[in-house]
Length: 591
Image 1 (cartoon, rainbow, N blue to C red):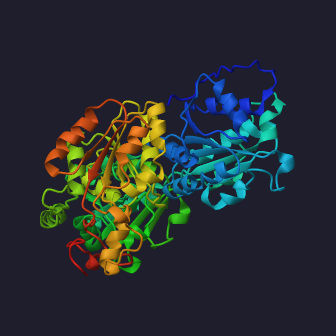
Image 2 (image 1 turned 90 degrees about the vertical axis):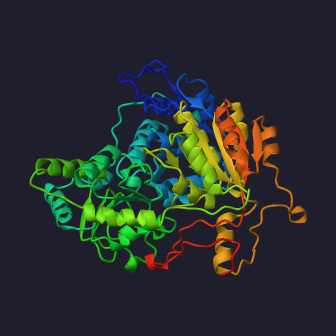
Image 3 (image 1 turned 60 degrees about the vertical axis):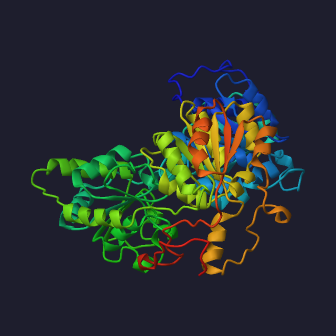
């Protein structure tokens, strides 16, 4: 997305009155917005009329508002720029709720704009009225109800500034219909009015703290980097830090790609379904460098047992995260990029005098890698789901942008695709929202038109936003969909197998009266939307099927039938510790 030109050329004469909706559209253009994901309705149709008059902004029309907000997130996650979605009042606005909560938990910059009933009808239970500002207050970084048409330029300015600065997040702007219709001559030079917010933004990290961290590194024998989504904008600085120190790197689900998983110092993912060696490293470490992370329960398990032998250094841009779950020994509230730059400067300055040698520790971890690699079993000629992802990794040379739904397929995509760079991996982490994969891939394809974009999805997740197949076709978005179809809600089935004596409680997603058939027939969904599709059931046919998917121009759906007995391993049970790690078994055994 190009940055807004220095001198913006408006379609209107400076003193020409225009509708509030046209002011809104021009305000978006001035922010450099080139794509929005907007679904019209009565209270937002004025905005859509305004969009048709824009030569800069393309509207990618989703087929459900949740598809629109997830697509805006996919756009933001793939590009690092704020995604923009627009919906009407009432049910249109409430359909954005899951996406706003998702962006809040994963710190994704998003600007959501909703139409609202006219000001005189607010609070009267009017047709399609919901108090969306109240509904979304706790799942947005900030939100606005516009009550004066002259405020639109300032509010849009503030919304984009808030979404991107500090810890990023979603901002909602609710605009009553009468304000969209009101004529006004806009003042584009209104200053941003956020004194309290600006005063609380973290300052540059202090040199003293950074020197203290470098000293801790020099005194340690078994340091580990624990990096998360906060490091996605400082990948180069992180790689340089690792080059200077030789410290191994464990990544969270959100941080995958910040450090290349193909590097020999990468321990891949840690946490509940992380590698044995990443969790081993954290458990045995004497120094944990936690950069851009929030000590989430899926990473730490039992908090008292997590990195219990280590001194903890926590660097995060959000002061609320420091000491929230785990008390650090040294904390720096600052942008990780600036902190890493500062530490790299210190390390380069004292490079010759500082003899860092963690080779023994690296050898110990290399042994763990050899002893406990990520593996999977075979099921005769059936397709192991992990193998499908390995093949995709090979055939795309590890360069595709991958989005996922939520569940087993999501964990396998995190474990078996080797991400080389940030913003290659788009997944709903904190909220775990099924139905995220297809619309997020759609947004990524808009943000990165030249990239190969693959949605690795589960049959359950895929169906939740299956209507977006129509958007792929209508907007000519070349998204490839690889469904790992096991006819079950796989992750819940895995828990049933392990902890509930395999008692199936509504986790079979097929047709109970015809269990031998694949149901629903995903290929017919694709056919209805004129998207080419194929199904593959045998391991020996898989490579050719994936190759055909990648070679076919435009969108494509590949239905990969996989056994539902497979489990995601390793697994540390919820609230457990490293000593409780499970590395064996699947649904063919009883527990």
